[in-house]
Image 1 (spheres, rainbow, N blue to C red):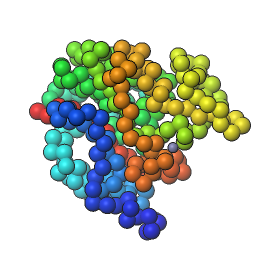
Image 2 (image 1 turned 180 degrees about the vertical axis):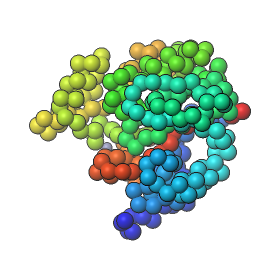
Image 3 (image 1 turned 135 degrees about the vertical axis):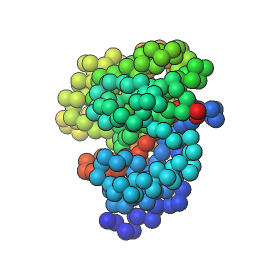
Length: 263
Ligand SMILES: [Zn+2]
């Protein structure tokens, strides 16, 4: 452990970025500061499934709930980089099914998505009190989880034209260097994605994941003005957010992004 950098990762304050001022929409993108986990999980790791000490994760959740008391019942997923979206209810919230998206129409059910470079997407139709949360890594983007998420919300009664979406802290084009083959695949398989890739070193390409997701959300029926992007590149801001790339691809903690309506 690097004791010199530890203090900067363990200040008292939990960072919560928000996209919308409406107090009725309980939501936020949590950073990695303000918790008690150590090492690769320092300090605000909120996942029990990455190898962190359960007691530290318990304490982190307690700290977060002191800041956000409405985070009582948080539906979570076994995230698998696909495009399956589950509707969560009070009865199913604790099941943790395999998938990468959650939607709900039940006040009191909060939706939580874990990430550490992938794009967390929070969505809301506040007229009808329907919420959604998605996890979009490059596989999920190719599978168009944004579209699947908007469809799942409309099945609960939301209207795409009233849905607002916010993409949170995630790896930026500055740092998302992939094999050129994957860049080509994005261009071939996703409409408009060629506009959001650029050449890197020989055999490499850079992809702007949030820009690709933005296009997908628009194609799913969202108004451009209703799509926000919040927070920095996780790798560039590795002191404030967990980043698998900043950690050299090894184990790291995960931050949570959440949304829902209080009961
Ligand atoms: Zn970056």
